[in-house]
Image (cartoon, rainbow, N blue to C red; front, side):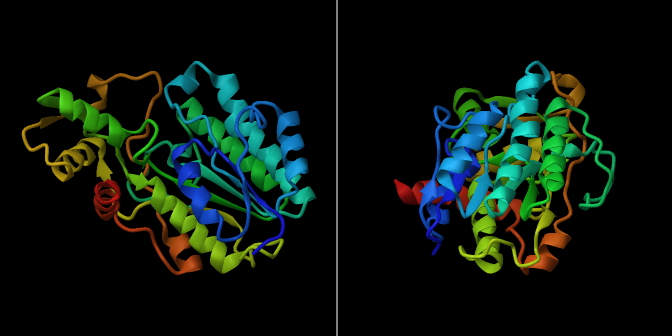
Length: 296
């Protein structure tokens, strides 16, 4: 257990909310609200870190509204691009490792196979560009860090594809869902559990480094699917067998932000380094929905 606290950002988000109780195994968790930690304000970030004097910083906060980022580019860059670099600089100064989460959308989707960490990034929307800047800023700060790129995050809280499909399936008999974008839907709880498992093995709550395992890793659900097939799996798991889900091309569902056609990430480096993989996307979906039933 660490005498110094863990500083966790993004507590109201899907990954941050899942992380908080799991991180408590290492020691007290400080999870500032927006009132005390404004990620769009570098001075606010510096003040919060210096007051907490943490043993570890976990940045689970982000501007995740992909379409809104097209019109809120400055805000998205402040939160996704600049803030991670400030956190990383402050983490290095106080001898704390930083864990940061990024996205498959740093790639353009043109590669027919899963992207590896060394592939050239070429984001095609503002969200991806700002998240890539954040990755680079964290690495440039020179402190101990882990960057986990993940994909198509969903959960039982907040706003995400799972909850949207469940709501629409309760309201309509037919849904039209894009079937030519491929990725790996990843449950926020699985991301949190995977992160804490890595920290338990490579950090443990006391060291100021990550036992040589720092750097960039892809951490997503195993396997891949399309939005349409994911939606069909959701309604099947929830018993809405009377809902018809029709496959449509992206061109029939225009959005402000362009999405990569295939943003599947190769998790091989993560598996080789840490000795495990996250479950398949189907298993994660089943476990996610089963956990909700069990908690009632």
